Length: 78
Image (tube, rainbow, N blue to C red; front, top):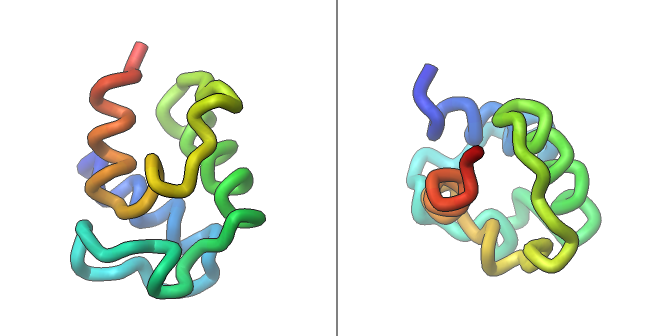
């Protein structure tokens, strides 16, 4: 399973909707996530990828899309 597929699976679990097919699609503007679901998703990302995401990074824009999440993980991986 690719990193993008793992992220999409987390988005699907948290939003209880099929993940968007376009990795650039806004997860917030399209209704997949809201600010409350962001913390749930970040917790799952931390568990799946074995990292600690600091509270200072909990900005919806940082986790706007599957592609942005992948970029974040690539630059913050341990």
